[in-house]
Image 1 (cartoon, helix red, strand yellow):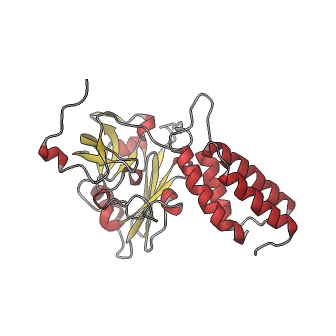
Image 2 (tube, chains in turn red, cyan):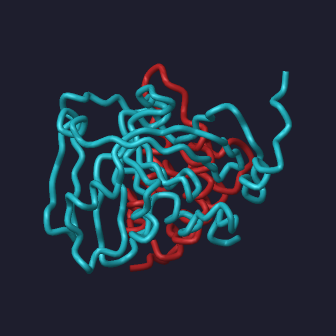
Length: 92
Length: 196
């Protein structure tokens, strides 16, 4: 089911802005994830199976255990997943 | 001091768009998982007549094989003349007794990472479940205790920290393939990304 209305449009727009903003992909990913989760909680967007998987994969890619640096592919994973999230937003 | 220039024979072994390094770069996302070998197992299942699970102790009793070959990463480094050791995937295939319907495999790894391959690529005499590099146990950042080793494909297909092989009658995209990496990953065709 695709949501519509002011809240949905605003959420999609803000998530896309966060994805596209200048800065480190990992930071963008964390910000976009937080905005998406807020939109889901508010009922503005629905959590599709694809977005659910993408956010789970993103969480793994951004997982940082104590004393470890993030892997060198975390930023690239973030970029690739965020592009897929952007494409999938219209279905949410 | 830099490395010696490549010989003509070595140059022919470098796929297009790659450069040669003597290092072994570490590339992964997230954190390196902490693995307790006492609780570790490897599961082989799906379109097989003999699904099985091996513990680390059982895995170590399987026959071993060494492969000397070159490896190629999608991030453009190539490492020539590597030596990996482990268990031949063809031994695993024999144990599992694949059904005729088995045409694809998904490698399942720690942290939910997956990589997919057609059986026609997996079933090759240079493919291993690799636990050692240069005769020493694989370091955790390189996929230890166990990684898949598929040298004819970009190295993301050689999935680190493997915990399962699932045989399927259909293709199922893995982690990177789902988000835009090329499904086939042949370095000689420069199959890096799905959109070229």
